[in-house]
Image (cartoon, rainbow, N blue to C red; front, side):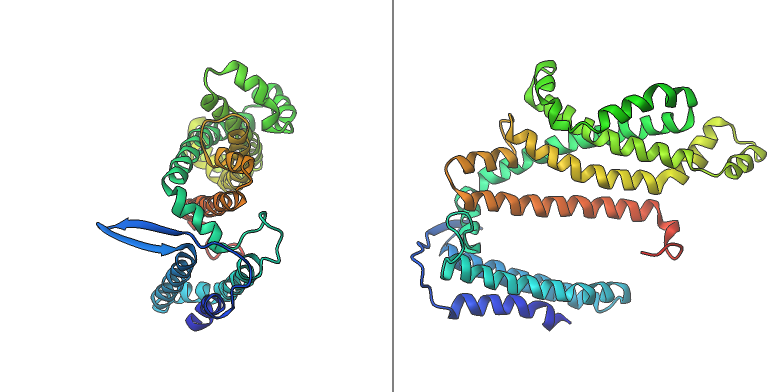
Amino acid sequence: MILFTISGFIVAILVNVLFPQKADVTFKIYTLNILNLRIAFDINSAYIVVLVALILIYAISGIRSSFQKDKRKLYAKNAAFRFALGIALAIWDIGGTKLQIFAQPFFPGPAQIIEAYLAEGSYIVQNTLYSIRLYLAGFSCGVLLGVGTGILIGWFPKVYYWVFPILKITGVVPAVAWMPFALTLFPTSFSAAVFLIVICAWFQIAFLTAQGIQSTPKQSYEAATVLGGGQINQILHVAIPHAMPDIFTGIGSANAMAFTTLVMSEMLGQPGGLGYYINQSKVWSAYYKVLAAIVIMAVLFSFINFLIGLIRKRVLRWQQGVIKV
């Protein structure tokens, strides 16, 4: 399986080396200072370095997974996708760089995209950190507010009566629609964007948390009462644990919407961030920079989903062997 996994990237390297360069593409040379060593290489060589790095990563990962049955099965399951990814890179290299049969400059080859990291690496990192800071501030507040509101709505009938209609009305309104009001009410564009992300995450999480609280079987409360548990204990030890699957479903759904709201808010008025970087690059028709930012977004969003999955797996470890995954 290791050979099958990395063979697609090997094909991508062979295509890059052996396929003749027909299109007139300038391979700029950049110099990097690594451990006080100045290394100069062009963008095509940098692309090959990335492919070699992927081969090494997946080869080492395959060797490590061979010692554990579960990880070995997961590695084998993903082998076909990784092979296809390598083939897709090879096709992209031919269409975007070697022959440039794809519409230019909208679909540059992978080597040109890597040029964005070489030319503006520090600036891209700066904007990425801004996006992470904005996302963490907004989404963490949204999760806390959403879970808290959901518990109150699901447990107290009076809160449900007064708050749930507001939740239904405001929840269907796209968060970006509140942008003019947010920019007026909040002192900075950063706090306005945080507000939009909070609103975006709040609806999904609060709605599903309330649903999970309300669907708790009455027998569980009766058992807790017999054991001497009061209202607070019933909420903390019966209702919330029962609602945890719904809470994490809400967090997962809200994460995707919050990330979309993050990028859109950055495009509409932030002084930094990946959305701002995309907007700035689009003005100059530097679409290779746009795609470079999109790649970072995809990696960042996948990593956030991975972290949420780890937390979910840890909190809901009682489900292992009980439900179909």
